[in-house]
Image (cartoon, rainbow, N blue to C red):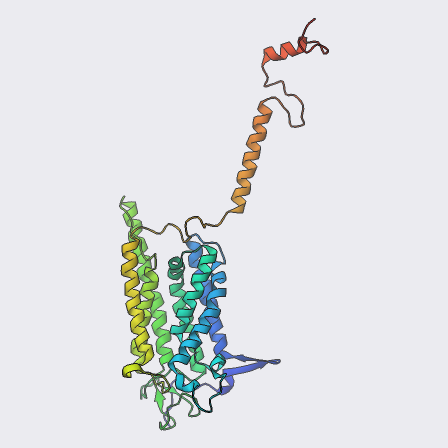
Length: 356
């Protein structure tokens, strides 16, 4: 048996009990990724003028719908595992056993983001641009769950970083000798995603600096990586990575239309979609994005409104006092006309006309 640089995890690490609850490590990895993405996205949105905590509000819609989409996609691309005689009819809902397709989560999550943006007044593409780097971080963290579940591995290899898969693992290919090492695709994708974060942020900063230089020289800055362009770059980067990873992946239960795995088809579509978003949005919006909110849906600053109200009240009170009334309701003769004051002094308290 060849020694593996990446040993198979002990099955005890896949889950643990907390009182009557069973906690799955795979779910914790997904949750950690979601928290990281929400935190990064919220910081990026606040830097662009959004209200704090808005990313969490959007996540409340995007995450559950994304999980449903991830499971549906997995079931549709692995129908043989969920149909046929002797198959448990409820197997498709047991997501804690693994089987959540990321491409499906993107589709479902997009629906959730669209709904949340409609409610909050955010621009959909503005949120997507802010989300892109955090999404790659979340995917990298989530891949640790694939390692614990002994899934997402590639062809056999003799490389020193080969991954050992337990022979009793559900995804272990039948007929393969025990002790065979495999390409650790979960690790490859983690590295690819983290490099993608650095690349996207590097390009974004270069574009921002160029626009700042143009503005300083009196020129007109461009749109930068706004209006969906950042998310388009994410789709291109992730789609390219998944296309070559899936080409060496062992997934014996995956359906393969025309002999090409479904995920490779989807990865190609993601690349084309990313290019389309950049081209189309570049033509529609060559101007800078001044706000992440839809016009007329900007949040109301209650403190500023209260300050304006107090200022207006103060000006009104000052105007009243200038007209001769004191704050306690008396008459202020300092600002009154001297002749009028003299007439009032000579007037009879009985005859308002001032007759003597």
